[in-house]
Image 1 (cartoon, one colour):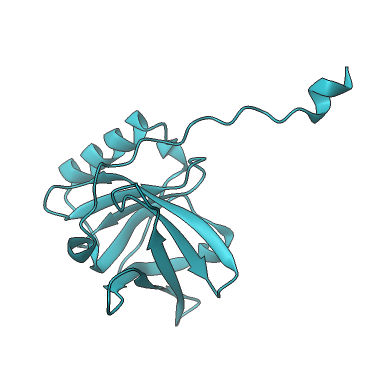
Image 2 (cartoon, rainbow, N blue to C red; image 1 turned 135 degrees about the vertical axis):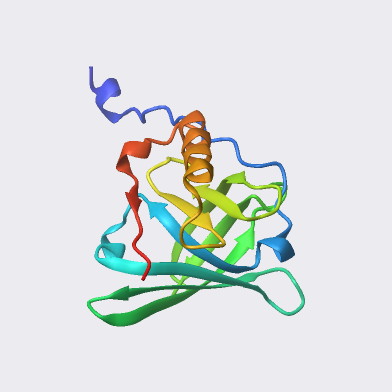
Length: 161
């Protein structure tokens, strides 16, 4: 009887990532088009992420920023690709303490948009090189997310001024 209480629930496999990410092409500015919001992002507008390849390769320097309560807020992090993932899975570290999984599950051939989640699919970011991709592209991104098991009803569109 008690074995059922203490037994871990079987984990679902994470969503399939893209086969390969060219980190140099991925670097640059990405605008958050929509996201499953996390508490610290509530009330943010103009959300974007800037990725820079660290001199010597290896790590990606990350700067996430937004406007919140009328002021600019930003946080820096580092991202390291998971070995054997084709750079599609990264571990992002904030403040040298907090780590999170960053899985690229959708990516345009021309690197104009990207879809990112974590293994449990509880976080999701729809990213684009422009703040407002056209509706057809956005609908295509949502379809990819649905196919990967993401509940798109949880997405909130990001406002950009």
